Length: 122
Image (cartoon, rainbow, N blue to C red; front, side, top):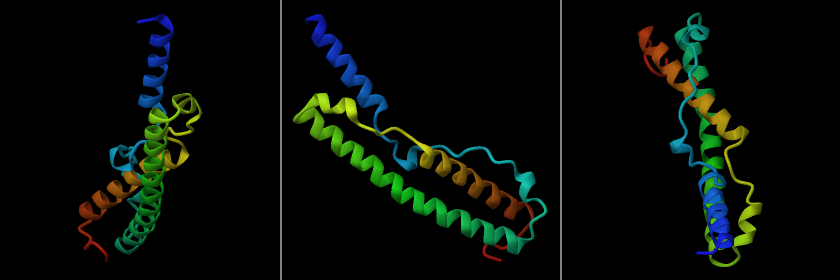
């Protein structure tokens, strides 16, 4: 295999591995300290959980669409015009970071609700 072909294949492989946005289901939850919620009442915790979950769900839909678009662009680029793959924006940005933070907040609030013996939705 010629050196130029090896370089092109390596570059495309790098783009495939790093250029696409991650599906939101594969993003981890950020650690959120429960101490910030300790002073909340059960009602406040439930309201905060509802707020966090609404935003998290909105971001989930947005990130799924972004990841799907990246996958479609990748497929088209691989078949029709591979040099276009160098211009894929993709990757995980601020929305993915916010989603991970909200995922962590949601998990932490749920743990505090349980620890305080709050009925979910109280």
